[in-house]
Image (cartoon, rainbow, N blue to C red; front, side):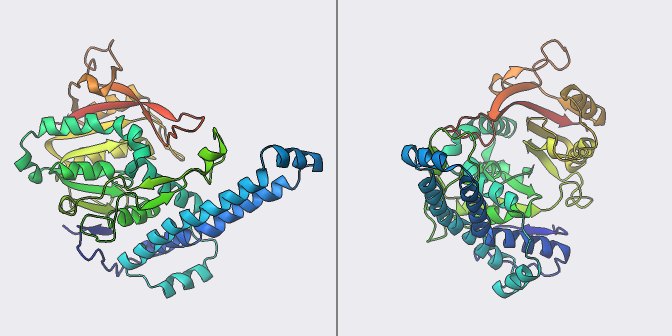
Length: 391
């Protein structure tokens, strides 16, 4: 099956040309430029902190210098930028090879588009390595992965037959959940809209067991250097996280592919009724129009196919509609989904008083970018359900 934007199965040489990208090539170049500019833009942020410090009165500077040594703190933070920049450049360089873009073309683009590349998107994409591929992210994965994986194994208990079960994971991020499904034998399609995330995804999966240069915990990344709030200690601010905690199996990657682009348009009409399962983890609230998401999920599923959902309802930028949970469920049922009973591993019953939803929708506390050494706790009562499409 060919897709209008970008698709790849795992390739041993890990490279593919993307001729004819037109506008999409421009997006890739902008994201590559963002990774190229990571060091300079982060250094600029730290320079602003130093400039702000210099506005203090002399006796305040003296107090800080004699007590906590604030200026050396900024200097030490600057050193961590070099470490993070090694990762940013590795992602960029792999992206150049993968998308068949020469360094000359990128430099020419950067000269013409000096402000290209969103620094915030670069930082957020690299932070996904912590959530998906480090020991430090285990507590977040353990809150969401086990119930999904257990449900999938229960629905499809025969391991030899799972290769015929097509599973779509939109909003896949850096692909850890999609990969865990592939490890269990499912035929998995990961989908992600963000070019910044896709560049990091493709680099991550180049570190597979067939790559002689790949090693567990080969990369260090300082996740807090771009965010100084809510830090318990300076050591916490400056600490490094290592990844990957495991190398992706080359064999399992033959069961996993990434399709880049907009979930609403990239699969249709050619993948209508093509998937046995759609799994939406922390995804449906990213919609501008959540009704379109629900309809697309329904259309992509085969008759009798299963939709597995887990996540919050934190609506993103400029949503056209913002439905409450009961409204989401009512619309899903109207479209043609039938909710199924859930086990207690999915959390507490959300609607014990509603007879036809009782035991079918459950909530469980799930963190997101939750730094266990920090002073903030970003978490949601993530809502889970499993629904079957009508025949």
